[in-house]
Amino acid sequence: MFKRIREDVRTVFEHDPAARSFLEVLLTYAGLHALLYYRLSHFFYRYKMFFIARVISQFARWVTLIEIHPGAKIGRKMFIDHGAGVVIGETCVIGDNVTIFQGVTLGGTGKETGDRHPKIGNNVLIAAGVKVLGNIKIGNNVKIGANSVVLKDVSDNSTVVGIPGKVVIREGVRVKQAFDHGNLPDPVADYLKSLEADIQTLKEQVAKLSDEQA
Image (cartoon, rainbow, N blue to C red; front, side, top):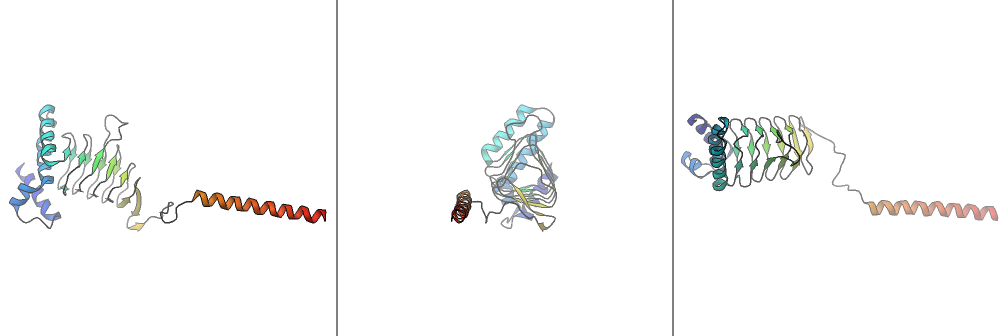
């Protein structure tokens, strides 16, 4: 347990240049506190002491504003930066070396039961405000841009942005998107063009009839 605590503290120093001392990190970093409470609650959860596990997790939520269900499975060296508003669901599985910023939800869609939460790979960065919903798989070495909503599996070595989340970079190569935000469809303009074409057709027909009568 103490070995894991030391590793969690070292992880903070690896990710946050503002961290100055071991004591400062141990006493003032809410993300670290949430992880420590989680590891304790998860210990009781594994031994089916669910009530104690939930009491610990709810206390952690109260003091850190971070909610991690004790049933979630979290790997080594996870870093929660700032942290307020983070929610991690019961059947969520998180790999090693994952960074999560404030306002992130790793939750369900509300339409599933049982295994209903995301599976996050190794070396994943999840930016502020991201929602990853449902029993989906996020691969290794994935980056998810701020405020994205991810509802489908994401392959390894990808970057995802948008609502809904779309892969914009895969294996270091930019992915051509069918939807171009700089060239949005204009239904009014399309209708006017169609109407103009119809008018031109009618003019040609009228002109042809006039020539035949003449």
